[in-house]
Image (cartoon, rainbow over all chains, first blue to last red; front, side):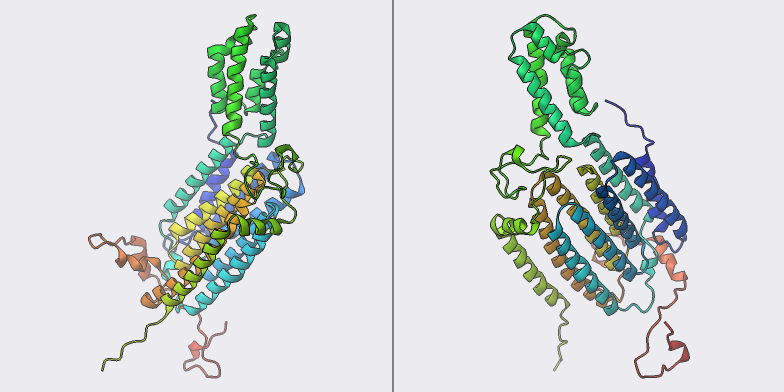
Amino acid sequence: MNEQPWITLTNLSLLLGWLAVYFCLPKRISGSSRLVGYGVGSVALIITAIQIFFTYSFNPELVLFCLFSFFAVVGACLMIVAQNPAHGAICFALTITSTGGIFLLLAAPFVMAANIIVYAGAIIVTFLFLLMLVKQHNADLADSESREPFLASFTGFILLGCMISVLNASFSSQSQLGARNEIERIVDDTNKALSLTDLSELKAKVINGDNNVVTRLKIALGGSGTWVERIEVDVQKNGTYMINKSDDIAEIKSALASLASIGNDYLKYRSLLRPSIAMPGNSGADPSLPLDKIRKDQSGRPAMPADNTTFLGKLLFSDQLIAVELAGLLLLVATIGAIVIVRQLPTKVSS
Amino acid sequence: MLDLKIYLILGAILFCIGLIGFVSRRNMITMFLSAELMLQGVAINFLAFSRFRGNLQGQSFVLFILSVAACEAAIALALIVILYRAKNSLDVSKWQDLREEDLEPNEDPEILLLDTFQIEPMPTLPVAGHRPAKEEDASHV
C-alpha cells in the first residue's frame, strides 16, 4: 500500500485554517490578533481554491460551487469568532443563504426555499429579537474570552483532517461511476473468457501483453488500497500461472475465476452509490424502470426529476406519511413547551 | 464535473467549524448558532448523497432535520430567556452549580483574571421625549 506523504497541500491548508481560527477566536487576556488570523485564513482559502481548480475541469458548476462554498465557510468562521452575538447572527444568515446556493447545485430547490425561510427568515430574526429582549447593559465578559481556544480549534481541525483523509482514501481520483463501469467490463470479459475452450483464444482475450486483466483491474480499482492488495495476494497464490503465460488451461481458468470473484465482490460491496431499483423516490417517476433506462447527465450522475417539488411531495405524503404527521406533532409539542417554559408564574400573595 | 467527495468535504468543514464554535464560545446564543451550523453540514451531506444516488429520500430527510431544528430553536430560545432572567447574563459557565455535588467547580483561571479589566459599557438609549438626567447618559449612536 502506498504511504501517503504528510506534507500535502490539503494538510497545509488545514494547518493554516487552524491557525486562522485560533488567532481570530476572541482572547481578551492574551490578546487576539485578528489581522494575522484574517491573513492566514485567506492564504488557506487561496491554497484550497488552487487545489480545487487543478483537480476538477473548469465548468460553470465548479465556479458556482467555489463562490457559494467560499461565502459559506467565511460566514461560518466569522460567526464563531464574532464578539457581538448580533454580528454572529448576521454572519450565520450569510452562511445559510450560501448553503442555499449549494442546495440548488445539488438539485434541491424546494429544500433550498424551506431552508432559507426557516433559518434566515424565522430563526435568525427570532434570535435578533431575543438579543434585544435580553439587553446586556455591559458587554459581557464571556463574549470576549473563549474557553480553551487552542485545544478547541485543534480538536476541530484534527477531526476535519481525519474526515478529509478518509474521504480521499475512499474516493479514487477517477469518477466513481466511470471506475464502476470499467470494472463491470473487466468482470464481463473474464466471465466470457471462462467459457472459452481454446487455449490460444483464451490467451488472446485475457493476456494481451501488458494489458492483461490483472493490470486493468488494478488500474480500475484506483492503483492502491485494500482491494488492490487483495489482488496482489491473489496473484501470488494462484494468478502466477496467468502472468507466466502457463499453458495449462485449467490453471489459467481457476486464476481467472478468483480474479472475477474479487471484481464481483467490489461491485457488490462498493455499490452503495448506485441507484437501487426498488427504493421509492428514485429519479424518474417509475421505480420499475430498469437501471440503464434512468436518465443520466454528462458525468454519469442520475438526473433528478425536473419537477422536484412534485415528486418530493408524493414521496412525503405516501411513503413517509407517518413521519410527516409525527414531525407536525413534534412542532406542536415544542410550541406548547416553549410557551410553558417562558411563562412567568404569578407570585403568590401570602395572606 | 464535481464529484460526491467535494460536497462531503464542504459538509465536513461546516460541521467542524460548528463544533469548534460550540466547545469554545461561552455565549449561549453563539453556542446555539454553532449547533445549527453543524446541522447545515449534515444537510449538505444528505443532499449530496441524494443527488448522486438519484433518490429523493435524502431531500425528505433534510426537511425533517429542518422541522426538528425549528423545534429546537423554539425550546432553546425559551430556555435562554429564563436562564438570562435568573443570572442576568448569557454566559454559560455561570451555570456551574448544576454540576454534581461532590465535584469541584471547573473555573478557568483566565475568566477570574477578567475582573481586572475595565469593560466599556454598551451605549444605552434614554426614554423617548425625556431629557436625560445626566449629560453623559445621552447617547449619540
